[in-house]
View (spheres, rainbow, N blue to C red):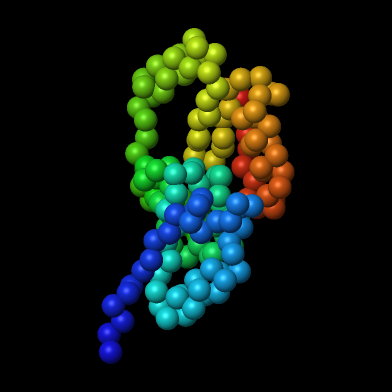
Length: 146
């Protein structure tokens, strides 16, 4: 009998991750059983790949991950982007000017770094510093100012 299910795709926050950003052991066991049957498990999220690398590693990262609300297909196993939709530089400059004029915080994700606007004691700075401090060294990405 031919297996009809070839793959599943799951979101992270509010779906696969618990409120403490871990995968429920029962879900991990289900994923293990699916993989044992040859069913691929794909992750899809609105987050940038730097913001869930460690958590997603709990599931196993054999397949590319769709991140940034669908704007980035990232292959953790190879450490490369397979496809991404970038905002043109002139649009980025206009957005930076817009946010700065209004003194609004913002974050820009680079290929392998997170850039935060605002003073170092700002909420976004604290969030990223604390987040990456909790991560194992192999899952930490540098945080810099804009």
